[in-house]
Length: 102
Image 1: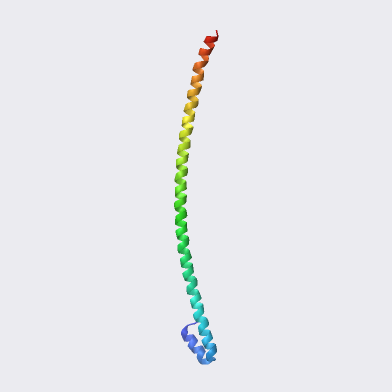
Image 2 (image 1 turned 180 degrees about the vertical axis):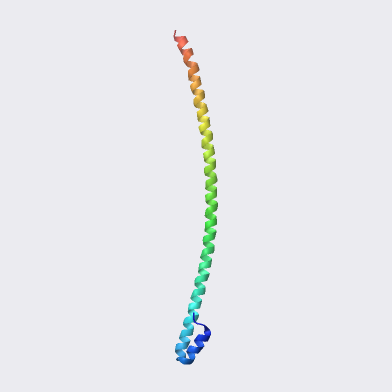
């Protein structure tokens, strides 16, 4: 980047209009650079907030998944118990039905 001292030196050697245009160009470039830096900072801040929000949502969904898995395990255990009970009940009824038919 051209310093102001370099601009002054150029203005002594070059047409004053050209030096003024060069100074405006340097100023404009500096402003554009500063604006880009500001926009980048804003975007990084927004993205950081969005990332944190998404992390919280993922954590909540993971907790829901864990709860659903526990509920599924409980249902599977209950199903197994009912299957065993039904099997035992059928087995108990089966000999009685055989005795009635004889």
